[in-house]
Image 1 (cartoon, rainbow, N blue to C red):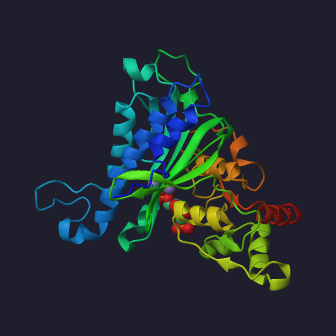
Image 2 (image 1 turned 45 degrees about the vertical axis):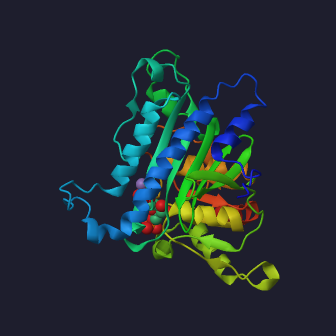
Length: 338
Ligand code: AHG
Ligand code: MN
Ligand code: MN
């Protein structure tokens, strides 16, 4: 059988990238490999989610007498497990954990990186077979090597990220990650169990026709946001329209689609929740990094997401992210209506 050796696996790709940096230690490659492994394990469980009624509901005991774990707890355990046992990560922060977890052991204390993640994003969609994802963000430690990592390592602004990425468990499973060198996407070849480079050098189109926002909150948005959404609805062919509204309610899927096709995704603040819903450190920062590296933009309506100095692990922020031309137009509405 012919083997297509022009297709690079995730491991091959990250190692190949290292060749350009003789001083690189390979720790980042190993970290990405660890995350890839967790993603494959999560993927297997996500694919079984439809069988839950047969196998037993979350929180109940299945036919083997084991407790069925909530999928986001399972995903969290997988991410934590690979990172703890790998050689590159000194500690983690997760949506599923109140505080950071410092891996205080001799190997981890000498690891260069810390990792923040949302183990399962869009988890309310699991029951209805809609795409969900995992989001991750990687920083180089600022604390002293040889000692346990500290909270400061995690509270760095997004522009200090070394790499960020996401996995989308969709009609195919993909891992997309960005470094300062660009954004690349890998599709899981289920037959060989490897992520293979399928989307090299992803660029976010400058213009798009998709806007993604929860219309149910419309009357709770600030004036400028309402005006922008209304402008999107009124677009005609003459001014680049008509636009299409697409909102899955699963950020990974919504932003992934817009990254590939061109578009804008927004989770603005509401009167009830002025900071919106999404978390800065493991939802907004990684996507802001990825989309910027692909040529797009991300703000909280006032400031670039990546410039926000985090104060707490679980802090929330409004988010506007996507194609530059659409972001520029949004800005004109946000500025003039103030
Ligand atoms: P999570 O499942 O990690 O809690 O995140 C869900 C998030 C995000 O994926 C999505 O964009 C947003 O919630 C949707 O929220 P609304 O239902 O309020 O629009
Ligand atoms: Mn989430
Ligand atoms: Mn989540």
